Image 1 (cartoon, rainbow, N blue to C red):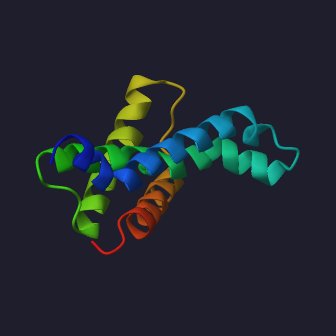
Image 2 (image 1 turned 180 degrees about the vertical axis):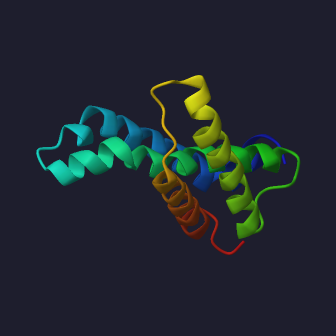
Length: 124
């Protein structure tokens, strides 16, 4: 699958990446400056972790589609999410001293992955 046909089949992935990028930008510029303390805390601590799979998984799916192996099962999506979250949460603090291990981030990563699978990959 090449060219126009490839992008036609990956419209939802492209839209998901673009939406995640725009929501990230909105978070950085607007949401984290909310007057509501609970909203500000959620957006500073967890919102990006919900968005991460919505950007990462479509890219993985498009790359896998290039070799005719797009995501076909939820367990594959969750396996990719598990590997990425373990890498980020365990290697992150080693690379960046300000980064900390947070088990709630795993919940956010998997919630984002579940949303991706349910909304972007229906019928697979």
